[in-house]
Amino acid sequence: MDEPRTRTRITSALPWAGYGLLAAAVGLGTAHALAALTVPATSPVLAVGSAVIDLTPTPVKEWAIRSFGAADKAVLVGSVLVGVLALAAVSGLLARRRLRYGATLLLLLVAVAAAAVLGRPAARATDLLPCLLAGASSVAALAWLAGAHRAQAAPAAGGRRGVLLAVGTLAVVAAAGGAIGRLVSGLRLRPEDVALPAPATPVPPLPDDLGGRVPGITPWRTPTGDFYRVDTRLDVPVIDSADWSLTVDGDVAREVTLSFDDLLAMDLVERDITLTCVSNAVGGPYAGGARWLGVRLTDVLDLAGVGEGADQILSTDVGGMTISTPLALATDGRDSLLAVGMNGAALPREHGFPVRLVVPGLYGFIGATKWVTRLTLTTYAERSAYWTDRGWATDAPIKPSARIDTPRPLAVLDAGEVVVGGIAWAQGDGGVAGVQVRIDGGPWRDAVLGPDAGDGYWRQWYLRWDATEGSHRIAARTLTGDGAAQTAARADPFPSGASGWHELIVTVG
Image (tube, rainbow, N blue to C red; front, side, top):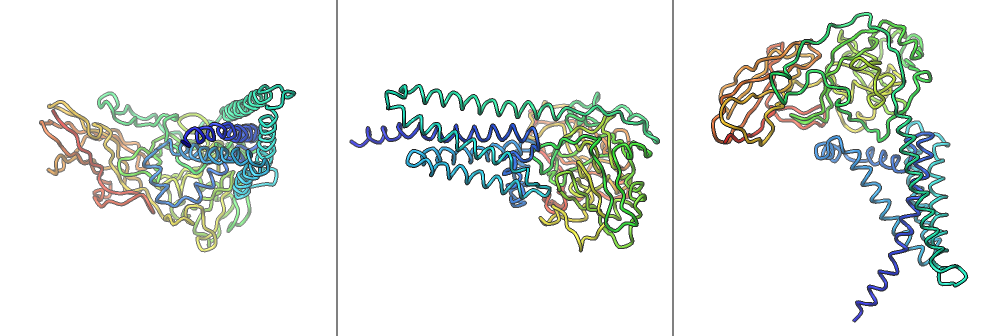
């Protein structure tokens, strides 16, 4: 007999939950627009999301990357939004009793975002402006909605028209703020028109790859738009090349600061280099091959004169993110670059424009700093970087690996000739000398290798297999130039990269 009363209570509470949601939407929309016009990373949702990334345990991060792939950031931002909106609905319900209760909860949410903004390495007091706007606009919106709701019973108030006017106006404000933020962000992310000089030491064009002969195989050169992106940033820094500079300091004979034009005036070199993320699981997608244009890292370090005590290069990006690179590995004769170009054009913003570090043979978390602005020569005993503080290895060469691109796992194939193919890399180990394939635990068979572009670049491979009916397990491994075979020992990405043979099961019918 209490069901009608319960239904009435729920029905009467729903508008208030909606008021809290709309008030929060107004705050987030206006704050997002202001952040897009100033510093995108100060957007409350992005700031909280970035703080969540920093506080998330490594196993959870690795699970998210495995489970969601390139969508991990979208999932994170969406999760933060869901949590904020749920609490915003509660603020509306609290405002039903007392406006100050709901307003206090909204301001507490803003305070959490403000703490996240101030926790950024390069935070300034002015970075709080989007949060302050979010707090003021959301509380003002909630107050208007609450006042309009309570006044609607009065005839002089015009009935429900006051509520409808408030809801309609605030909905427009929230939508406009979000739209302005997206528009400005899109305009800011447009590539800068940069004319890069020709390299002093170009490399010849890559020979034709195996793509025409082996459908489904990874392109030998990864198109820029398809190149993987794994980093901790939820926004993409927008840096004007005219405002960018690189400082080399620490254990050096002299501190050096270079502008973008200074860097372009130095001898530029082209190199074909494969990058791999340490989070890449066996057979995973986080590897890519590209042609990079840049200045040799050693040429820049020589300008400063490296001291005898340093054992690491601590690189810092525009937002204060730090990465440590072993000095001995970065300067052992490999073509480590301060890259300004990728696949014949300036770096895209999401891949580090205007300048990034590219160290062949090292996983990206210790050798591929994007948006780099500082190189500090120091020691591991004196300074530690972001990933070092989280228990990742300091010396992490890329492990040899062969990936099977075709056929796909669990594929159903016709009996007869099947082409097994993929990509393999073995940087710092004499390159890829061979790839072998094994079917159902049988003998290893040598695959046909594609062209060779040097030890720092991957190679395509394929094997023709006469497939018979039934379920089959396919495995592949790399043979390196120094005579070693890729290890079968399985290891997770943490702390120094995954290892083990890539294996998959297919069905032949």
